[in-house]
Length: 164
Image (cartoon, rainbow, N blue to C red):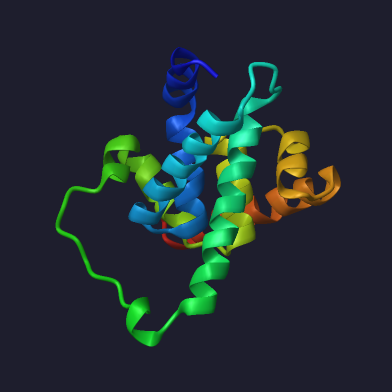
């Protein structure tokens, strides 16, 4: 793959891949790492004829996340689970500019992982239910039901918080 093509793919899909990675791990540094590794894999293995590059990137990102989660689970210690707060400006705040979108995104991140993933893929990733089904390994019907339940749960949370 030529560098120009990779740059175009990176600039076109970086935001969506980062948001998806962040929705999976809920950690900015890990999301940065996952995003970087995803595009590194694209550099190494994407051919010009690869169809559905966007979906391939999401699939690679999820697989990298699952690999890292398995490694963490294998080597985790109680001391390694402590998080250190950072006073730096959060790049996520720069990506999600609108205050209302920040509130909604914050509530999405509080959903259980399966709901969070499907909402991120559908609304932030712009994938159709059919594409989500192939990316996640669900049937199209199961993806539709999961999205409906996730929307219902998110609506209840937002109404409870009187965000809307």
